[in-house]
Image 1: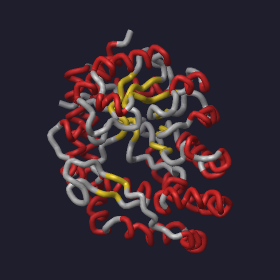
Image 2: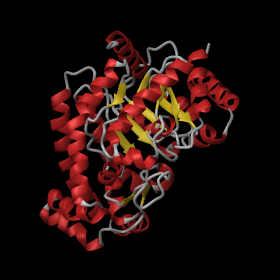
Image 3: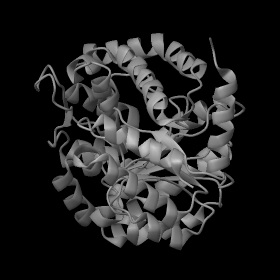
Length: 384
């Protein structure tokens, strides 16, 4: 039986937390790999059958609720989109897959390899984003494999999401919302980190031109997606990712020219359609975290992974910015339930419950101990 009362109550709670009006911390499930593993799938099976993997995520959340109490939300819709194809789009990089290039139980891996030569920036500048992108995509993924991934996703995403909502599960980030994102990430992926970082020092003005073209194309796509869901309250947020763009990785000059203008503009676009952007920030953003105060209070989510100091972030931004995180992956994988409970309890004590989603830092690793996942949610629910 569909539990839409539970869904609507959880949806209200998610919005209250984003607006920093909640009275208690809210637990949020975030773990691409642990769910299928805990529900009896190998990672090879998860990549090969993302639809089954999506339902496994819902089933695992249900299992956690039975053992630990309410799970307020999940970080993102389990879309039924092949994770290797998704990551390929994100970084224009080759992805090694369990069961194909890797052993069946291995985690998928992004291959750090230069795909694009430096002179191919001129293809983008003279022929446009679409021509440039379409020339590179076949170099990083088999197009028949990619086309099948899109077909499976298109045929199943609505049914998957309907099932989650019937179970009362609210997803914060939705495939309905595209983000214009930061061009730095895709350029870094297709050029490789070492080559692109050198480009940043040698040709930063050219990279601004290139980034402007990529961002304009992605912004147009994002606008069409946002327009379609602007009045749908069930569609809450979308990811704006920051991985290799972290403050700890880049000089202030590079960050100010190639990261922040696009990150800010992407967030502002989402806000203009009434959606609350989730900034997924890996690595340390301590140096520049104060810049997020340029967004209105009670409007964004900062999803931190443990390398950015959440306590300092709270001090710098104040109590009216929503934080999400940050139980570290090593603790979930190798710690004890008591250590997890103590970490979570102290984190809530220090930050305060308002505007706080408790979840894994970045993403729970595949080797997360089930008892530690239970401890994380139980500690959140038991906090007084």
